[in-house]
Length: 284
Length: 307
Ligand SMILES: Nc1ncnc2c1ncn2[C@@H]1O[C@H](COP(=O)(O)OP(=O)(O)OP(=O)(O)O)[C@@H](O)[C@H]1O
Ligand SMILES: [Mg+2]
Picture 1 (cartoon, chains in turn blue, orange):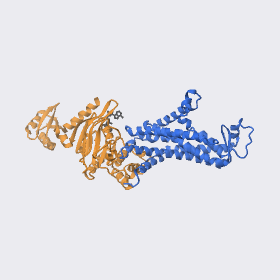
Picture 2 (tube, rainbow over the protein chains, first blue to last red):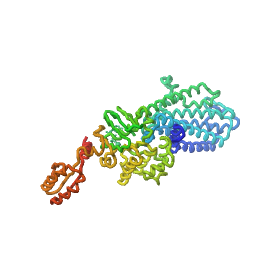
Picture 3 (cartoon, chains in turn green, blue):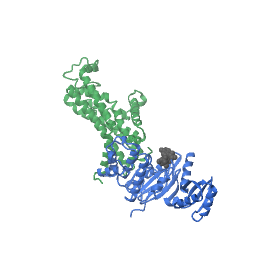
Picture 4 (cartoon, rainbow over the protein chains, first blue to last red):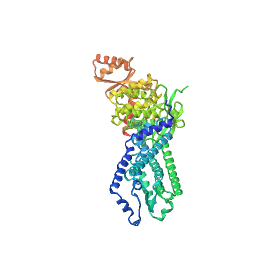
């Protein structure tokens, strides 16, 4: 008998399984290829990108110093990768339970004198750890490399009009933005987890998760009156709340309600997944 | 005092959609038994084992392990149970040793030494470091048995452990099962669709067909129950008949059927009968010892295909 408490043993089991699996690193690999590629290209292209983006809005602006810098590029990267990240997340989260079904390993795992609830929690925590590591990796790589390549400076934000944030006021906003992004991705992972609990194939949970995100995103952005009432209850409406970290002043009230909305989705999907998982007949 | 009955199922039933896969199954496995669970394909063996190992929930009835109700005291009930259901699947991207290490963790943790020990027991010593995806079916079957033994459980539940093994492998598994029961005082619950296999190792058995219990009891008693007989074939028939009539004392009786004779007798006396037939000038073409349980099981299996 080992002295390590049961739950830590279960956690270790799930982590070993997840982090020794190739698919876990696919997302990391893609990021590792894309981010440097884009950032190096932007360095070579120089400020043309910025001038194009600002054409029309700010012809008369006189910008002092280096505004085409690492901060500016990091934000562009975050904005454009934002659509792809959920796929990579669901790729791993969706496999957590469904992978055991397709592999036939539920028959190995669920005959042990350990409650299914504990196994479920260990699996979920492992998934959350993956999300945190992944988002951290993305953040450190994209911001770090961008600063290295393009240097620091005041940050220019092209959201509604032009906002210039002083150099000293930027770093903490990125940290907060990535924390909020991790929270959004935890929501995505929880949805993937829910699909994973009852879909017993490799691709289903990914398709399911992305399907939900795409449909709800359409409802969120489409300018139709009918949807206006429900829009703000959809998690897709709140998923990009990290962008608000680059407004001045930061709309903390909005961010708070987004965080709570996402928490609601996490709790709901997790509860549903848990009920399905513990009641499940293992027929695979 | 630990209870004498280690595994008990009470009216265990499982319904899939509108079909009963297992119906009112009440089994009793005693401490130290090698319990044979015999049934043709689709009889409900794996479904029963899934219920015993808590993979699926019974539609009706319940399972009791070591005196604990499986539903209300799951962890206690399963704490000394190892098993394998249907085909042996593992985390194929991990090595055999790593798989066993993880499984051991789920059972409270095992030492590396024990892992190597069980790999040795099933004859996989040299391959522990290899990824399971490089294993043949038979090797996975062996690893499945290793995994079932890993935490040194008192009850080992094996679902057709010899399927897919070569004759040598089958023999080794049989010897291993006997060793587990005799030397290590384990209780083994073993499913199979081969009566012969059960007969070779089990002391008690149950036959299940279409989800329902047909018979349960001591293997020896069941095999003898309907009597045993020897099928005698040869020429000329009249001489065979004469020999059989002359040896009434040794033979318990005979019936003639399709040109052969079913002779009720002790199998030990078969050489004697053979001798007598040859002496009488009979050209013996077959002397086949049969048991009615065997016939009975065969008839179940044959009918199975037609249903
Ligand atoms: N997932 C399922 N859905 C519906 N019916 C099922 C399912 N699994 C098994 N069955 C049915 O339950 C019955 C018993 O199947 P089971 O696998 O328990 O038989 P078995 O005795 O293990 O057979 P075998 O010797 O082929 O392994 C069969 O009629 C089968 O069709
Ligand atoms: Mg079976």
